[in-house]
Image (tube, rainbow over all chains, first blue to last red):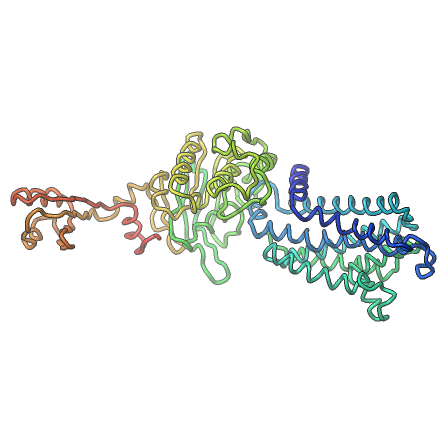
Length: 245
Length: 301
């Protein structure tokens, strides 16, 4: 049943006129445009002797993909299903609506993995970008970052009564996290206080942990702890407040 | 043995009583209607039966099972059509039926079901592109795809045009002929009258009456209204003095005679004796609408 439902959700995801193009397009354009700017591929003293492409742009692209899926598309889909009565209709069938939530999650996570592989692969093959030096730490940061951001998305879905509201709330969460997370201004150029904020907010924690690991360091404890804490708090709240109708 | 039993069902939302005290039972193979105005507690009643809501009091049984405790078994054997539930816009008709078929132990053949419901041509059309009537038929298909023993249909034909409504009624009769018991929630008098073997009239959370449509009408006074345009002046006072005639009113060129029993015969004989021809003669007798007004003290729509 989960298989059939996931297959259907995957088809619906791909049939969306905007979502797949945006989710693949934004990170790929990011990596290609910056990759073609002279100098970004070369080692730079400012980036600890490594290229800005591998240690700043690629982590940013990866984190943005996860965040777009988790905080905007995923909650909009769930809230839309609640709004239309799709979840309630499932409650009246032998399959509980939680199964649809699981199918949605699987589709979004698979989409995230595919785009991440695409970003790293295109960077490596087309632009000669270095792979993350601490590959295990990078993978761990992706997993924890996804857990944190999808929990935020679930919480958004719990409180948004319509798909439009979810999209709106998602954007309200997404853009400040971009600004404060070290995307518009890299973390190092933020005042010290905001640097901590950047490591605590889930999107910033993800980006900065990915940056550390891409450069070969271990992720900072503050980043890992924040991602874990956000995951726990947001999923518990979402489980408490989520309504199926 | 009844397949659906509701005994003294009570349900509140906060302090608002949605269902005060409702009892009825449905026999296998019946089309049983729950008829009442909006807000009477019809949907709450069936949602408690479906296990979607927890009753605050009373006992409920579907196929001898408890709708909450045995919900898994109940969901396998009872098909449900909900009021106002939609499907994802880009889901295609056939995909929806296939998906729901995968939920059940003994699914119906999806293609056959689409043929029966007249949706075969729309099988590859997205949900948002099909008409209101087709959406409604698709939601009936989803209620039937598990080969249920009971189908619960809530406001089945709301929003359909008259032709689509009649087609849906034919369909429901065909489904019943295959042995499926049908519990129908409606606020359309014509629908209840046409389809139901028995009707529970629900008003303000209580059962006002349970009977066959004819039985309900029979409970109302056998008043009739006889209208006609007399070809020559008639002495209203003499008309009014006739046995079985209760009242005579003049409406423009027409006379409206309210009477009971043999009033029609008495009036037409009187007119014949006086060489008056009754043009545009019409006789209105009590129907389910009148029965409803008599039972609940108000009109349905």
